[in-house]
Length: 343
Image 1: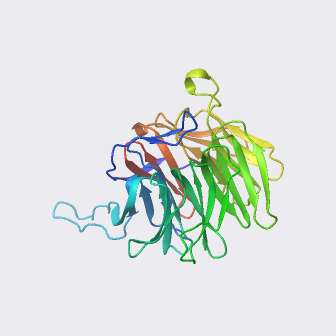
Image 2: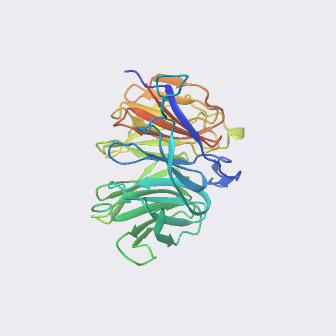
Image 3: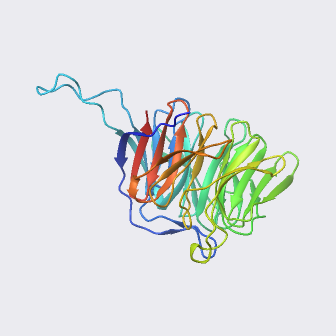
């Protein structure tokens, strides 16, 4: 199994030089001027959304229309990435983006404590929900036809918002977390939430129950496997790096039992939120690092398949996202650059 590691294209979005504190006390720091959020469009994944400070940019990394041939070259030059649209409404950093399955809308959240529902074509907000008392760290879609938005926040709550209603209040609030909720995910009638208190909570909306897995380390990223039988967690060492020599770990846990299926180490992650993801039909685990490296592991064996160094120079790689349809992936760094990789 060969993981694609060739740089295909890149583009830079200028974001303000701000510091984002998402951390437990003392916190998990997001990075200055970083690309905090990436999301491919649904379906073929032709387009890529990139979010950092206040602005979200929609790009076509590989437009079909290339510049015409010149007198010096009979062959047209490859078309560079094309900026399609810019979305501006957030007053602070954009920390997460989730695209609706129809591609007509996406939701974004960030440091201004707000949740925005966007019309993609019109580049305007359809809904603006307020209610969180701290930064909103993550978001995802839920409900029949993607009619509900789920958000997790620094205020230690998970909130559900009805996109069909004109009400600005959440339809449900979960307050069981003891610290910042860093990552949320949904599968059918279950809502997953991972947080700095070192726990993953699974809310069964049909049964009205909550199941808790104690991880023991701050959880900064949560990704479900395709079949929903396991989930991938990025964690930080239990103590600040200055007081602990324990390595950062990414964990694969069985959903039904909470049993540890596999762990992955070798990446640098002691202070910042670094997102991980599953790739190549869940056969690979991919994560950025604080030292500019992207690590790729075999999901089942836990062995390193690839170590891509200098992905963003020596700058931290804060997020990675995989495009299954195109067999490519994108990385966002603290240098404010989005890069697309493939074969």
